[in-house]
Image (tube, rainbow, N blue to C red):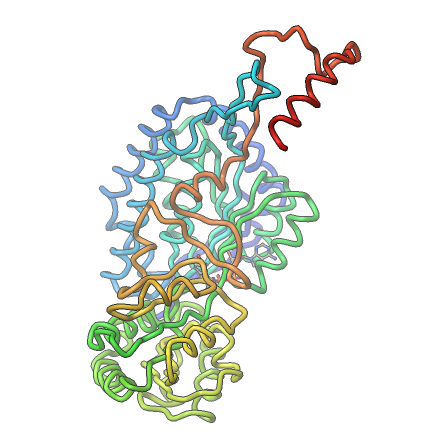
Length: 483
Ligand code: NAD
């Protein structure tokens, strides 16, 4: 790699420099794509069983050295050790699921040829794209990209990963560990740098892009991909709602909504930002939420803000919400230089920027609603559609069915993300396509239809020798079938 240009990362909690990394040059990106293409040719030629064994060996190595991963995540993201441990362990869960299930979901499927083509056999193969470019964010630097990396590899692709410029260390560590298992093939390579290196990856002809990050960047990535006809998955931001019905278990609802909104310093794409609570239970719910929020502290229960520039957005949203609503926890001084203390504001108008834009900080806005129809209408009235959480003993399913988003957890938060079997992704400004689950495996392959005659019919349909009798047979069969 070229060392002409470098960039540094910093401990978010202290501002001290942590690491120095090369900005991968255009030429190096091109070479990485060429190496990945060679690796993909080898990898896609292996059987599902061979790929499974290699990926499971890699996963064992990851688990064995999990502490090393945790150190790197803590250093560059600023999150507490236990959060980094959970994140890394969940990433390994996905490697295991993808490795074990790829054969089941991606093996060739036979299809019915239909009456007119009854002499043919027909099947659909799932073909890996070749080289998948994964562009990642900084908030969950191992868990989030692994949702693409593991599934793309298990589906038979080679991967080039462009981690966030704030958290490259863990990406390089992942590539190093897989290289220990398969030293002779570059199955997973990492290119480092800011957005221009991500753009370079797209420009150098990868076969699919899996992007996770902000909606604004996603639009640029999508435009660049469309220009080159490269398919893409976009996992973007959210403004996730929590809906609390009058029959909800209020203690649990408040506790989990608080964790959803404030854990990881509020830097979770699927974290709660808006709460709609039924007016009959609003006072009690808000009281519990307030009490619990006053017991948690930045630097103890969650870490520093990873990306310094995000602090300005959080401050702007806290000021906006405070100017409209009633602040019950924290105030504008809660947004410090590196840490943000919990902030909870009540009764903020739906059209305020703090209610419509992603805050990505430990800030919750609680609005009271007359009924769950109003809660659903308000929850859906947003450009985003990532995840939602519904709290009700009796109406959870009914409310969930009306929400315009990719993931809903009833009487729980976040749990779908920990399940290998469940697709992860959003609608509207929250993105398109899916990672995780069978859908996540299918995402990294394309269908190839393959047909062949089992025996030849005396009637030729696909030939200039087609007879008038053959035409009659086709029209008669069609009339019988479709009248
Ligand atoms: P970001 O959009 O600033 O950057 C994401 C990645 O894109 C980085 O690696 C960046 O270097 C790269 N990039 C920037 N410009 C590019 C360009 N023109 N071409 C190619 N790549 C480019 O996002 P971020 O601040 O790193 O991450 C936070 C965002 O990610 C939040 O909005 C959060 O909600 C979202 N997120 C979504 C999910 C999900 O699965 N839906 C998961 C985690 C984070």
